[in-house]
Amino acid sequence: MSKSDVVIIGNGVAGLMAALVSADEGKKVTLLSYGAGTFPLNSGVIDILGYDEQGKAVNSPITGIDQVPDSHPYKKIGMAAIEDAIKYFKKTVADEGFAYTGSLKEQQWLITGIGTLKPTCLLPESLQGSRCFDASEIVIVGVKGLKDFYVDMVKENLAKELGADKKYTTITVDTYITGRDLTTRDVAKWVESDKGYGEFLAQIKGQAGAGKAVIVPQILGTKGDYVVYKKLSKDLGCTVVETTGMPPSVNGIRLRDVLLSALKKKGIRVVENAKAEKAIVKGDKVTAIEAGGEVRTQTYEADKFILATGGFYSGGITMRDFGEYKEMVFGLPVEGDCVEERWVNKQLFSDKKQAFSMAGVRVDDSLRAVDESGNVVLKNVYVVGRNLSGYDFCFEHSGNGVALTSAYKAAKA
Image (tube, rainbow, N blue to C red; front, side, top):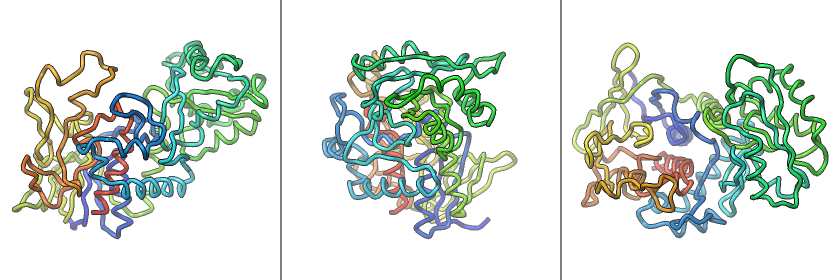
């Protein structure tokens, strides 16, 4: 099997972005993909930093980054790489017809599936919740049989968030799909069909009009192309906004498909069902990865390796016995608070970070793993995304931001 310049392990945001940037650096890239990835669980928006160390909303991501502790991945990545990564991502998705809006200077606002507002940095046009601020009436559209979207709850919470000076109206449409509960992906497929779109439009058009904002679940088509969103906005003659929602995330799947399309155009080799199992090490460098497939184990040689296996959340890091962390591919040292009483907060959604979420691989400024003395462990292995220590992506709302920017930095190294 031919040798690659770079082998990337992982098919989430970090893995796909690392592959794209590496290819643009003129490298021959192989990406090892195992499983469906995290995109169906991913909002598909780019949270850079939503909340500070005290859990307060950050008005400007770039200002918030300046305040994070030295142990945070953003300090290792550096502001220059963060800014360049944002520009690169925006150009990549725009070239695929799925432009994102936003910048590091100010937060954008999403409407969640329960009607609350959430800060983010970059998001698709269809999810711009801030466009509701100037609307005189909010029309909330539910779907009969759709799981986990309750119009009355959304109405109540939105009234608290946007103010009682607006009028709030709810409507429930029927897809005429019977026999089972529906997911947003089911409804999105229905809406993007000619018949489904016509039925959907007919049921809500009477509630739309100038000055109104129509709020819908994440159902405006499965593709990252804005076709359904733009058509509906025109036909209704008013603002249309999608909410976030429970998995499967339609927008996460849209983003995945857009990035995979970009990968294909760059000639990046994607090996599916390839579970990285063992690193072949000579001295202080890795020469190859052994990965199991559907039939047999294959060996993938390269000069450089980027680890994007998702940390605890995707099995990239495990802990069978308390306090004994293990990085599963290269055996890299993992740091984290091992005191059982502090490892997890009793209140899941608390005002403090979770110690288990902070655990990960300690790295130097080039994102290579280091030991307790600061010595680089493997000189040609770079660590990105949720494998990194020093941040709680859920508390901070920084997950895709760290994934994107660390992937860019590692690919450029």
